[in-house]
Amino acid sequence: MTPEVDKLISGYGRIFFACHRHHVRDPKTKKVLSAHQAGILDHLDEIDGISLFALANHLGVTASTMSLSVQRLVDGGYVRRDPDPDDARRVQIRLTRSGVRIKQQQSVLDPQLVTAMLQRLSPVDRAAALRGLALFAHAADEMRASLNASPTPQPRGAIPRGRLEG
Image 1 (cartoon, rainbow, N blue to C red):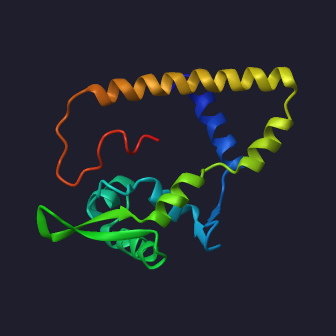
Image 2: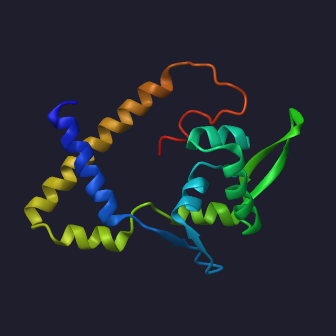
């Protein structure tokens, strides 16, 4: 690992842990979701379903562990299980309207903590830091576009390209 890579990874981790949101509150129902549950919602879509196995595999957990997490989200009204149109033995997991609402309003970083962190910088340093972040975001967008442009067949039930990179 180069010193530049090490510096970026170290800096990213420190920012993440300083500003990480631990819980997400549903503004409508006032229910609290864990960051883990909100993270699962980030990988789901209202229209395009995904199999439990594909989701578990992507997140690096067993299907039984993912099944428990998904069931809690189903019980909370954030996720639904629909029959797979191609295989009646399987289900596709999709967001409900409530799940979409949480996904749209939540962020892994707490805006108040990010504000507090930015206020610790001088105006000049803040502008430089935000410019640097914009450059990294641009490079990330270009990298994602080039990776998504390569035609690679995906296994059935796989998460479509572009859905997981955000």
